[in-house]
Every structure is written in C-alpha cells, then in structure tokens.
Length: 304
Image (cartoon, rainbow, N blue to C red; front, side, top):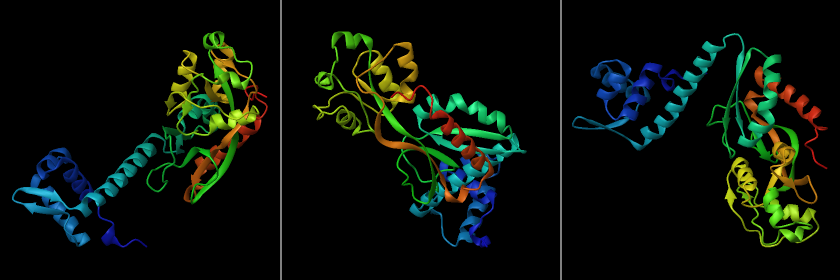
C-alpha cells in the first residue's frame, strides 16, 4: 500500500517541476497556462503535503533547497516515464512496447536487419531502441532490456547469452600493399587501432597467433563504426567482430589477416530487470531472439 502523503497529484508535481526548471512561478505559469498565484498555491500545497519546504523565499525569488533539487530529478524522471507510457499506449493500445538499450554496432549490423521478422510475427508490439555504450542502472532508466557485452554479471538482472565475440584483424588493401603481412610479427610498427571497451583485445589476438604482443600503439575509438572507417582509409589495422566485418570483407574494402575468428574476451547478452522478466513483449522478444541466435550458428560470417 502506498501512503497518499507520498503520492502527490500530477498537478502539484507538474507545477513543482516547471518552477524548478524555469526558475520562477511566472515562467512556470506561462508554460502551464495557469495564473502565477495558482502555481504558487500548488507549490505551497505540495510543501504542506510533504511536510518540508522546497524553496527558500527571498523577496520575489524562490530558491530551491538542495533536497528539492534532488527530489526534482526524481520527479522529472517519473513525469517523463508517465508521459512516455501514455504516448505509447495512445499509439498502440492493443499491444505493448519494448524499450531496448542496444550497442550501436550490434544494433546496426546484427539486430536491425533481423528485426523486421520479429515485427511481422508480433504486429502488436512496438520496439523502441536507444544506444548505450556502457552498463546502466535499470532502476534509473525505463528500459525493458538491454544488449550487453561482457559476462553475466549485471546485478538483479536476468541474462540470456547470445554468442561469443570472435575477432578478425582487418586491413585495407592499400595499407597491406605497402606493408605486407605474412606473420603476426609483421604487424610490429603498424598502427593497431583500439576500442576503449576492448583494452585487452590485441593481446588476446596475438596470443592466439602464438606470439607475445609487440608494443601496441594506435588510435583509440569509442565505437566500432568509426574504427572500421579508419581501417578502410588505411589509418591502421582494426580488430573487428566477425559479424561486423562481414560486409567490408565481402566487398574487399578490408582484408582479413592470419588466423581468423579468434575468440574475444566476452560475449553478447540480452539482460533485463527481474521485475520485467514476465512482461509479454519481452518474453516474445526473448523467444524470437533465441531462435535467431540458434539459426545464426551456421551463418557464413562466422569465419573459421
């Protein structure tokens, strides 16, 4: 049971959020299409209900307390979530929505080309995608699930393994013509492009080639997409997941080097908050995704 004292009405919270964001009751009143005195009364009612002041009054100015600013961040998130849920319901009252956080490269190259099949088989589900490069707190963001790279170590979350990351060293034909590579030792002196989230990738790759890694030096990137383009124009050698390098290798814009499809340091996972485990759109997506991954085990991009 939720005590009503701690569940202020939307009108009270909207007035508080607007004053906090705009800096004055006058500006908030214009935004909410209310009178300034009405906004002031709403703020007073909220303070009375919570039993604490939200603002310090200095002449005609309202200065939020530190506690009110922290409270305001929670209120803003809650109002955003209510607005988003209402918009999704209005757009799709007969189905449901699935809000998914994805890794940019995975979403572009692996998930997006397959997603149409899921939507065909589940026409009542609306899928909303947003990119996240790093893990986040499900309690602080309104996602139903996320695609995660690493291990099954998210707290208070369910996990489903998709597949291990396998890496292939890729070089542009132009750079390869200038610097022939017949063994892993020939990479010494070449720029080795690196990804922020795969700091041990090159060491793992060299170990799979059977040698100690040389001095690893090269540009640092936060996304595979920009690192791939850098490799295509000859700025260095990129270590790319097989699913991501497939198109560039087929088109000849990149050339694979030496032993291919080396096992990387982690896997791709679907993760979800335990509280959403039985949410119907998520259950449907999980079942579909498992089938896609199972079929994908024999795809030609899995270079051996």
